[in-house]
Length: 110
Image (cartoon, rainbow, N blue to C red; front, side):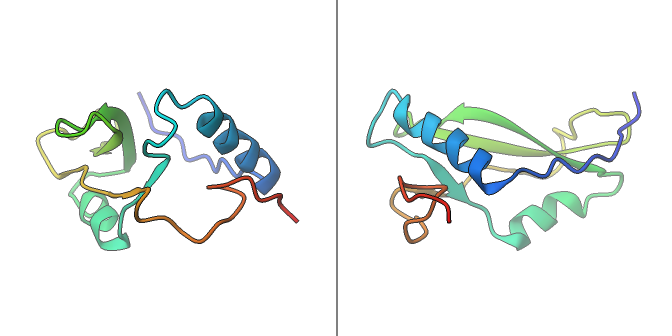
């Protein structure tokens, strides 16, 4: 399988609606709604030999059962590079959130 390069741009109104839908239907109303990965962390995965992109998997943190994301590199055949660099320890929101904006709260996009 070849990996095709697509740009999946999304408009702010759509992104805001999608994240609001997640917050409204989150089984844990005070649970994680996002997370932060540094550019360095993402680049470490992307810099692997043969890495063509990233794949993410939804997961649950062992200690808290909060939703998290596991990142893995993907090779040119579309296969996970699971024996390479993996990342998970993002900084969760809450508590490490941006100031209120249309992606993390009910602020209306301008």
